[in-house]
Length: 384
Image 1 (tube, helix red, strand yellow):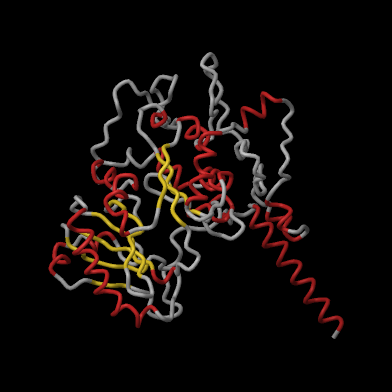
Image 2 (cartoon, rainbow, N blue to C red):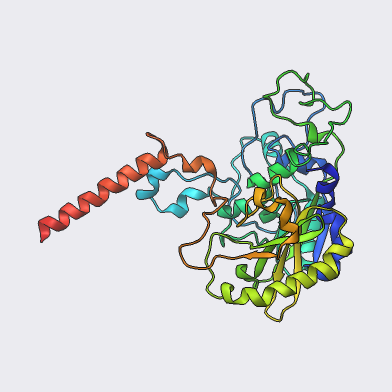
């Protein structure tokens, strides 16, 4: 993947060209302080103090809200302890009280910085888009952080919700830290060291150079449509400026209407590619996502680079890159029957919570659950 191909897929780059064919979007440049917050660092570091982030990332706290709007819980988020799930109501374990309990004002300002101008811009944009929006950065949306949301979606109605999803997302962290660095022709700007304020001595240390190289990151807020159906979304693969494959965008589910609908959808996507996408998008190899509405209209959702961290969904990259594929008929893949789904490519909870090893939290939880089940079954046997 080349850097110019990746940069071309940034939403602020392609949105002006394809505005008429995509979802209404408001794009806001992000200040450096908010980027530091997303990285778990001190948002407003003291220039005279060089060791503020030496103890690792700051606790996961929402920023201080300055608009007067009351954010939903949590201000402080905690992952649930699986062992205690049997003994407590799960809703009590996920979030703490909304009230801050900092010992002093200086600590509160450090852990919960305020971004009043950004907050005002985000809340105004959400209001402009109808009261709800889907956030994303230059490339990625925080789709891996939906476990934090009450409705298990990335739908946001205020700045606090946007900040929470962005801060919790590994997809967003990848955008910030690794997206450009993963390109084969990426060159670290001169004068930028691996860790700001320290010598470039240990390759295993966290790479903070993205914070200091002047690259501009953006927040894109996209209008929320409650009627969007996941079975209407597709990922399209373009190689050598030819559409070589289409996959349903959610390969982990079977939608009964989709196998029959595929024959109707395919020509609409092909026409959309030939008439709208191919003449105006400069890359040779890339992917684009679309939604096909019930009335047959095709809406562009996003662009992604070819390969790299882009998921091939129901394909494998090796087969998409076969030389003869460009000369063959377009292959359109959907899940054809119940039980034939591809396992989910991304979990909806942090990977840490999926440690099944002996003695892990989930191991203890399952053993305790099994013991409780056996106790209840034994009780039933005695009663009968």
